[in-house]
Image (cartoon, rainbow, N blue to C red; front, side):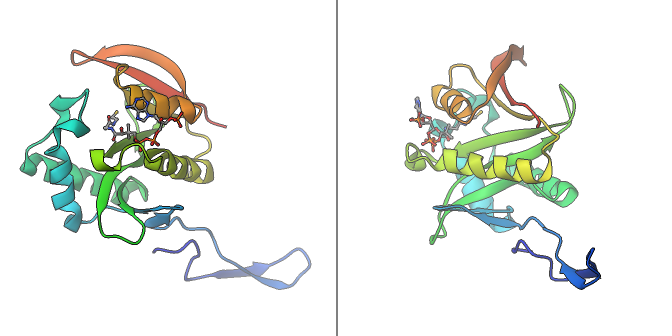
Length: 195
Ligand SMILES: CC(C)(COP(=O)(O)OP(=O)(O)OC[C@H]1O[C@@H](n2cnc3c(N)ncnc32)[C@H](O)[C@@H]1OP(=O)(O)O)[C@@H](O)C(=O)NCCC(=O)NCCS
């Protein structure tokens, strides 16, 4: 894939009787925004993913989620399994025109807790913070959600003390749904209602 258009168009008859080519919209494995390239993760992204886990500043309120290289590889495999199952999942995020990975994140189906939802996630290397990249990536994720699953509530779960993450959620229209403890850690759930 890699294009919005199917390579195998179907034909059918329009109301006027003319034969019309219909090309169903297929979501690509890669989405480009103004400044970012968002790609389905590949095994070759492993070094970047391990490096992110090895960056304590990228886990300011959730350091317990940092993984050993072996565990990080397993997590990357799970990202890839979600893609294989659902046709969408978290992206590897690069700056357009470069090979540099600046973070991981996106939107993924989530079927626990409060029923079927879409979960938005973001984690960037500190060198990429403060330039609006997370906003740009989450807007692309919400675009996917609107196109494909407008019936699904979208959620962001973060630590209530994570001011950057909380601000990002609020600025994109998410509202506080609940606060709770999970495994001894506080979390706030933000939601964007289905349409
Ligand atoms: C959270 C994170 C993704 C934000 O990425 P970013 O690219 O810097 O975010 P943006 O530049 O798009 O900024 C989004 C908003 O948050 C604000 N913001 C960014 N960093 C902030 C901070 N440290 N404190 C308060 N607000 C902050 C921005 O000013 C902007 O709001 P504005 O448009 O009203 O000015 C990034 O800080 C990060 O990767 N943090 C570590 C990982 C993490 O905590 N992820 C969440 C796990 S649940």
